[in-house]
Image (cartoon, rainbow, N blue to C red; front, side, top):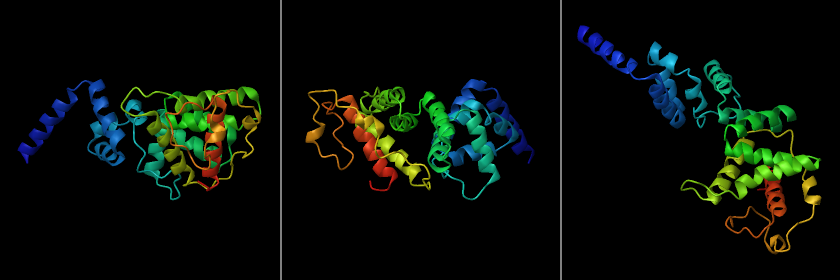
Length: 243
């Protein structure tokens, strides 16, 4: 038993000698890959429990194993999500924004949370926020919506992912959240932005099948207005359960 305690103390001394920045970076990678592993580390000992509360780690924590809405309240999960929100975890802010906007009908709060998530680099939050702004009645918001949405629809990825994969991820992840909600606040199918005329003589939108989400991501012959309007239309169908 004495040997075990001596070994444990030696191991802890070695771990505590690791620079804090390096240790938080390691634990952040653990948290980003598995919430279960993060919680296990958190419960290992007092030292790891304290380190695991670092905002940098919580900002990167994965929520893949956590339902969007907690139908059965668990104090441990609720406390964890609250700490993640305080740490500006982009996924937590995105999910809460979706819940507030589409489920609780808290439009301004929902947009604020999605904006905070988007500002933190959350691609899907940027995509949804662009859709929401397109639904606004004023030209300035519509222009803002197009700007945000076209960041996703036309961007060139710097990594190995293609533009199409980024767009598909936004559609898939937004659909996944919507499917877990009882939607009490939908968007206006008669999108105000669609009243604005196409601004390109080379736009080929009228020649395309627009019954489903297009997979022709590399075809940039559509004008900016038509690209955004088509994406808005398909998002609406997804919210209504048509797509």
